Amino acid sequence: MADLSMTTSTGSHIVIEGTTVETFKTSLRGELLRPGDTDYDEARKVWNGMIDKRPGLIARCTGVADVISAVDFARTHQLLVSVRGGGHNIPGNAVCNGGLMIDLACMRSVRVDPGRRTARAEGGVTWGEFDHETQAFGLATTGGSVSDTGIAGLTLGGGLGWLAGKCGLTCDNLLSADVVTADGKLLVASTSEHSDLFWGLRGGGGNFGIVTSFEYQLHPVGPVLAGMLLYPFAKAKEALAYYRDFAKAIPDEVNTMGGLLTSPDGDLMAVIAVCYNGSLDAGERVLRPLREFGPPVADQIRPMAYREVQTQLDAAAVRGRRYYIKSSFMRSISDDAIDALIDRFANVPSPHTLVFFQQLGNAANRIGAPETAFSQRDALCEWGCLSSWVDPSADGANIRWTRELAEAMQPFSSGGAYITQLGVEAEEGADRIKDAFGPNYDRLVALKDKYDPTNLFRHNQNIRPAR
Image (cartoon, rainbow, N blue to C red; front, side, top):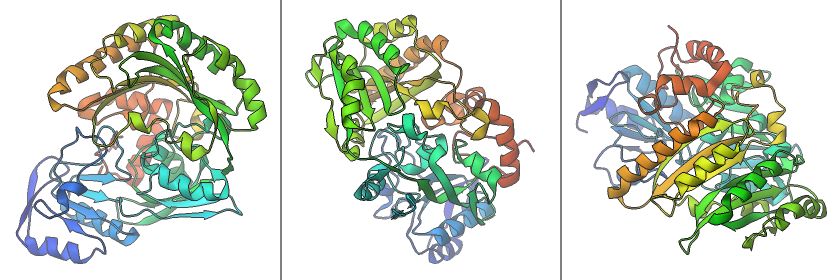
């Protein structure tokens, strides 16, 4: 095997002898890929088609032993490291240029304990796969809103989702995690073991290690009353204002989204989406005023399986398109914020782009900011713009439009950001990432000093060690 030039954690380059690479390869049960190998180009792809990075090596791990070997190899040679879970990461932090990509995509087992109402899932699992297993027993936990999303990134970033009004965020339902830390040790983090690390994993991102499996609390979730209401763009202001008022006065069983999109026919539309997790008869009564408002040009709300709810937005999140996102949290939605959104969406450059308000949920709001690393507990919703297009030549126009929209919406932000939507420091700036962690940042720095003092895990929304 030929010698290999790789990128270190400081950005310099190191030549690793072919025999050393071969020894690393034989330590793995999974594959070790390098540029030119048959599966290399496919393995480095993630959901966002804009991401075109070329790792020096890709370790396709099949279990904890492989992850430990990969971490040890990276630490020994001081390599730049990225970690791939389900591969849905919008900013593309899962892939690095020239370093070692530790790929958990082959680690996809899910084991459900219906008696205890828990599930243990490996780090490469997506929410569609997770829900497939848990819903066989009529169980689920809060898990985003797109079935192709990986469980790892969403959980470590907090985890907004349809069930959060009644069940809390994804991280609020995490019971324990198996974590390979920067020194190559496997730790179990829970309220009774390494509780400080467990606190940091629930919203602190991938800063403290590689989570090889997650244990979740599950909840009974049968058929839900869910779907979308569509309104003509001329009525967008009234629709989003009604959405705001409705979202502030709902029972725990409901969670909501509101936004703007382009229909398949090319018409700009306002949309309100809901999920009622409870008695269908009660749901009909709660949602009736919403369904009668307008009236909408299309009412798609109906009883459906929770797994179907999780796929409703999949058409807006097609794997391989080009994506760019900006978002921030909001404590309230003012008329001025609605006006700013509508004014600029009138000139949206791509029919695939979606702007949205995603509600945290009542149960998520009731947890105190210090209780988990996710601190944005007083927010009503996340405002976001998921810009999406197909033609690479349109990158500049779409990115520019998204940044200008984010700047116009910034005065209405509470200051915090959802870290799963943030890029690396070079894109966002250190202050923006610090603000995302809010009042918990100093405590997170102390955890970083303890569990990753050399900042091996830095290719993320990075919390820098203090020393």
